[in-house]
Length: 85
Image (tube, rainbow, N blue to C red; front, top):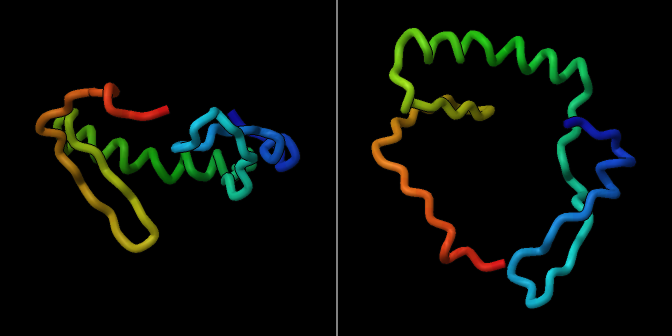
């Protein structure tokens, strides 16, 4: 879902670690224009294709401004019992 800058400033998010559930506005949230979204999709598809042709389904890629990493998921166990509200 995309938001205008004005809409994004009005979105409230919970503050972790607070005793009561308090909320604060997210300020530095990245907002993509439709052109940026389209450009991102165009850039991502070759990497998705490469992963499908060269790796198994448990491999993920992380792309950063200064590197690209491949990660292999060996074991994943979801556990939320220790996360505090």
